[in-house]
Image 1 (cartoon, rainbow, N blue to C red):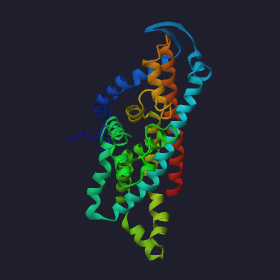
Image 2: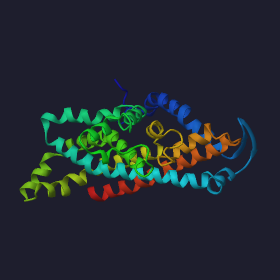
Image 3: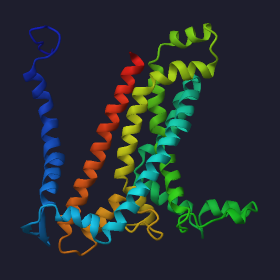
Image 4: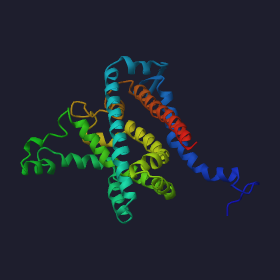
Length: 309
């Protein structure tokens, strides 16, 4: 049995520290330490793996003034934002709709939740290579079926046209990620007392009105969680776009994202100061993820407090 504190309600601080210490050590060794090292590396000039003179913020200035960073970073970040917007809209419309429908259907709920969640459990690298085969213009089954039913005009080079490839990859990401909000929203709906919706019905509210006035406000904590995780996933996305477009974000950089740019600078650029520049990109990426996530969480939590009074 856990030893309780003097108040008799919770375990004491030494016992809590004992059980959390292994996790804190792993976090410090594999996450915090590399992050601090990358931050420190970004202030130095590097000659291969040999550290040179202290540069201050010159590596960060290079990201804003020198090519290919000056033009590559805004373009890649724009693609990251497109991923976030596409995922955010789909999860909070299609995902929420499916979660609501499944919540009302006890018999088929578990089966369809498993079906929707399965792509999310598969490695994005595998998903990317799978869809590359499915959408192949020469032997892919999707174009083959379209041609067989007389829709040759729709048999497009889905992953070879710069004008449509980013949209196709976003749809693939939505297909893979959709199961997560369905599960989360379904669990959140399961925690809402049925008495609340029943009371709204007795007061004359329709099903849509009850959902909008009762269910949706109570889902705000789940929506906050999905939004923050979607932002983190969208900024850090790498395996899926790498599997589909390679390290250059093919075709013609249309699927390039920040993490691919970081990968190219770190391992493929051949720049003597690659460690310094890539460390600056990694630090900026962390600030971008952490800063936006923190501000968004603060705003959304404040809205939750206003809703719950």
